Length: 457
Image (cartoon, rainbow, N blue to C red; front, top):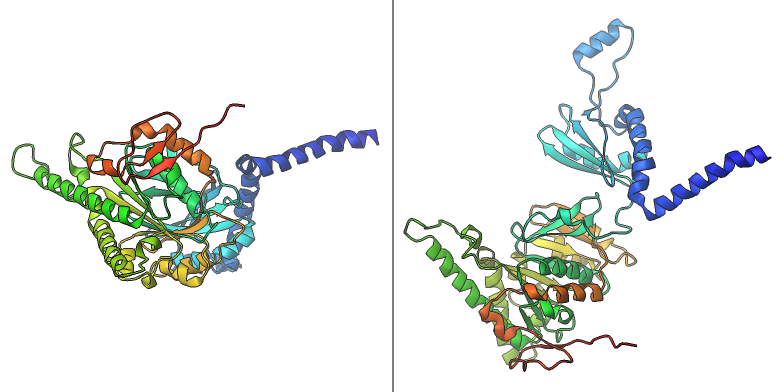
């Protein structure tokens, strides 16, 4: 009995340790246990699995003749593969497709491959003609998402905001996708995605502009880092006028840069200008865009039409001038009023969190992919932060943002308040943060954001 206990006790301790590692450190567990097991399973059953999934082709005439000479039947030939290479969340295997095969054949069989090899998911990505990449995900990477490592950031206006279901990070690149629409119902995680976005931009040399017509309740905590904040429709209308003036001034600067002379620079946007004269990029965050479309009377209708026209101009022309739009809302469609559909068409990037009805998902993703719309309607309520990200190229993926509290995001904006760039046209809209100590009186009409200080016990 004692010998049995001596043998079983270490095994039991190892088993418990592995279970703890699997729960607390899934990446470590994958490298120690998951990858070797799955890789051996793939290598041992590759030919039979491909044959069962209909991903093989008949053997060539030479192979068939050789097999007949030996009294055997030539087996179907699977695609040639590379050795399964481990990643942080699974493994990657490159395939060379046989004649007559297409990536769609493998995409249709992805679920069968997932069950055959016992992994969380299988993703297919064509790399070049005749070749594709199979990415196997070892576990549910969206169950718990942690912030991305800093080394993933590779340049200005590039932010890793959410983890994709294939284990890679969704990087928000403003220079590639200048404008974005973010949709989501209450408690869907839309605010967490926006917090990650603002905190990432707060650490860069970027002008942040906020339009929050719900009296600033969503964007007020980030006021120390904002260059401008409009908390009601009248101020938003004036702020949009100032942004249009800034855009026109930048276009004049671009035109002067391409004038005659030895130092002339031929460019069609601000990024082609020399760094010494290049204007600072501006990111305009519109929280709950429906508030800009609401009108109770004729005067409100005039103001609404004016604001929508200005937003459309910024969306159409802003990219070249270094002005970028992030438009948030619960619904966004033609029922908002005149100009809504035209504005939405200019927003290339789409992020759709859990929504209350299928029509809302169609507003965001129907013009990208029908499958993306179905994926958005299937997001469970108990997983806030999960969203479907797509763009006009037709590609889409499920993602989840790392959780970031409002206090943590506000602290980042306070710590980076010294990085607010100078932009004189927006000085009148700079939010004044009220503190206990006496300070300069706020400008007329400027948004006043109260802050509290901890009381010493």
